[in-house]
Amino acid sequence: MSGKEIPLGGGAMNDGVVRVGDTVRRPPLYATQLMRDVLVRLEQAGFAAAPRWLGVDERGRDVLTWIDGDAFGERERGGLHPYLDETQPRTLFSDEQVAASMRLLRSYHDALADGELVCHGDFGPWNLIWRDGLPVAIIDFDDVHHGDRGHDVAYALRMFVSFGLVDAAPEEVARRAQAAVAAYGSSFDVPAILAREYDLAEYRCRANGWHRQLAVLPRERAWLGAHAGLLL
Image 1: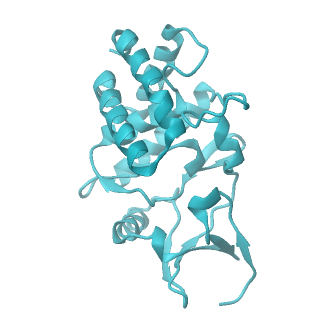
Image 2 (image 1 turned 120 degrees about the horizontal axis):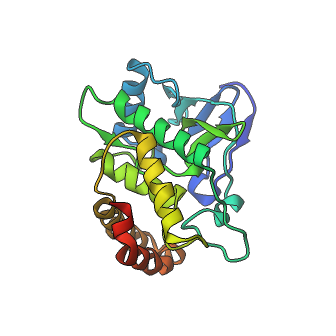
């Protein structure tokens, strides 16, 4: 191997992930065969908005192509929902940014339409590459899993729109959610997929000890309980 190794951000979850030239090297603990299979399928489908899997290096690390652009770092995550850090202002995304993110998610799903759908599993703003304020690519496929489109859509709505965690009228939050679903381009029972997402989120939080996120789940659920009708 040649080239300088540059550690990449993202905190403890990305320990050992480095950039080498135009590639990213990821330790084996982050890799699954499903992740590799998905990246290969995306390449075969001509989906350019994701890294290419290039194999493994002499140290057994997965080698992916590097994608130029901006990414949210660990310190910035405190201002993203539901990663609440009361010392930081909330990060709010414009309608254009949310719509572009949802269209990107749709294009990812469509690229896998020739076989069983594999959800990204962590489609939040921190796992997108941004240029000029808009998302252009998806990264970090560590949490891919088999599921339906509604799993990723509900997760994305929770992360990009947020329910019960922003200082906005319920009608405005619902409008943003409806616009996001319209940008994705399919119909969903939004209250149902959000309720399922909250149950899954609670499971993930308890399994991983994510107490900060777990503490805000009741606020999200309460908003949905009070305003689900606005989302229909």
